[in-house]
Length: 257
Image 1 (cartoon, rainbow, N blue to C red):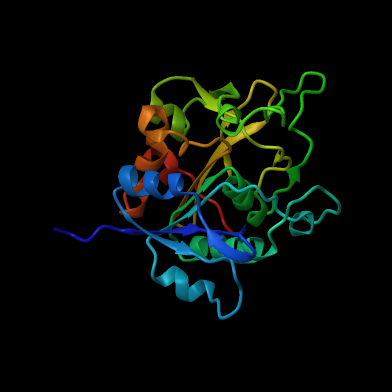
Image 2: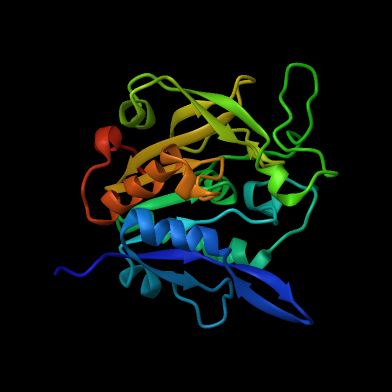
């Protein structure tokens, strides 16, 4: 039996008791292993002794998870914003994305990971979309509700005709969960919009950059993934990309880093 490919999964700095820990919520790892049919290695968010080139050489792809932390505004040339922040994750994840793309390996992003890809490719973020204002949706549930109920906060997204997700799903709309306070403002270079919310907010994008297949979604497909076949698609696509197969029309889109 051929060896399964290996995906690197980006970890965060989290406090456990009185100590710092490098952590990934188990739901991301299980979804990747089960539906991507791959092995997983966690990438610690610490720069000491870190070489993105060395780590990249040992991986078949990269998956960037969601996180309670926000990307520091200075990473996309702005000031201010609200934390919490995770400078170690910013350092490592942004370096890993750039190196993976340079080496032509696939990069898949969820929520914060979606935003990280956008930033690396020269895009910027807006930080004001948690609450409804005017015609804008509330992209995050109220703080007063419980953790699981937070993921029940949903809205539809319209899929771009002829795009990767439209071709894979065979329809023009999905219902997705919405658990984010930040989102794409300026779209990164080479990215193609795959889905938008009813208020026009970009919710998914794709690219093929120097042979690196890129797919990012703002929602959380890993949440209760066993219950939702639509969510499983993200990880099946990742498994396909890890094996070097074109992810439908991703192979027809080209850009330069």
